[in-house]
Length: 392
Image 1 (cartoon, rainbow, N blue to C red):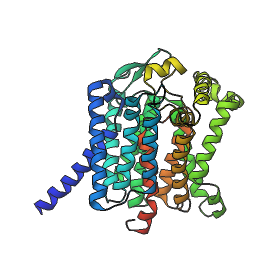
Image 2 (cartoon, rainbow, N blue to C red):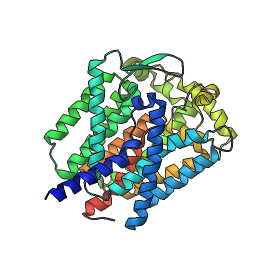
Image 3 (cartoon, one colour):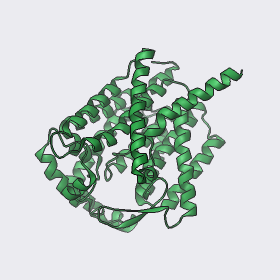
């Protein structure tokens, strides 16, 4: 009995050791040495997981092969022009690592629950810093050289990139076990919702409202089978790209100026994002097929006035060109195809809503430091196996 107990603890510890370096709060990045230590740890974790594939004779799913090719491509193009190989590796390692981790542990009982516990631990710590440090745990600087308040999980918009996936993953875990909200889930949801209220981010308010609206829509539309021809992750992804094009090329945000200015209390220029997009497009056109890989932060600020393009689609083109954009798009479309007939399952609905709101945030953010987005994608990738009650 004691041996079994120790074996369970060892497997959980192993799971955490492989996961921890890929989930890095912004606070950890304040220490450059610790940040780079985590990246070295992450590379070793990826190598170990590759060995696990070989030893266990489990084949990585097709989505992982896409992510490997995408990672190699970004590293290659970062050596061709103004990109920086070290910066590219630093950015791509967490995304590749969390994808591989999710591919492996989506096939193991309890693995994803360990990830949710770690993410929720960060949410609880962040909530504590929100309550104890109303003026911020530390200050950072925007690309406009304006200081802003940050907490354990970073600036308010960065926090939303943790809180909303945590919300979706918490609901997913709950509905894989029971149809009713458990006490544990209610406590987690309360912590997430209180954090959302305290950070006072209109982006997060809108995204959380959309997530709730999507879940209600999916419930109301459960019996309308014709909807599932149009409502799935593939169409949502394509729609997000279309809206991004509308924002970047046609300034469609000006048609909603009343909502943006009077309800969301934001400027129609989206905090100068349209000017960043104009500069980014100049450089994208110069290397439309290859992109640049990730660019060293001061260099990027000098080129486009920001450390990143502030848009998911533009960031994919800026870093990987058309080739990189197509590779990532294939992943989203494959996951959409695999899950389009599963939206009557509450757990799938939760992750679908989470992925949708991340794409919504991706209209004004690059999602470049958001490995949880890829965790959600690969959990969804394997949901057919869970629903069938077996392993792939």
